[in-house]
Amino acid sequence: MLEKFVVVQEGQVYKGGNGYKGPLLQELGFPEGPYIQGVAKILIRQLSSLTPKLKFKIMEYTKQ
Image (cartoon, rainbow, N blue to C red):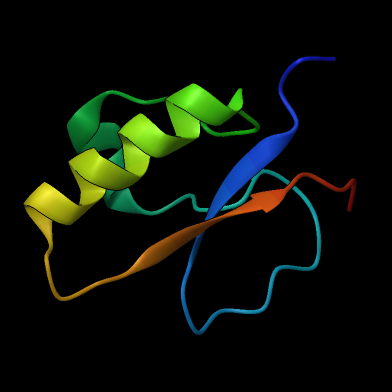
């Protein structure tokens, strides 16, 4: 499985699963994670351009 990474909003505890599922994903047209690392980085840049106040980080995917 190449998709080993998820995007999580900073301050939120990641307990496994697909990571961030908020409305900004739909606005950007991204599917829910997991992602390859390059796509996760692109998603964080896109999220930052929409909402500079919110911060996101990349974490390794774990099953829920």
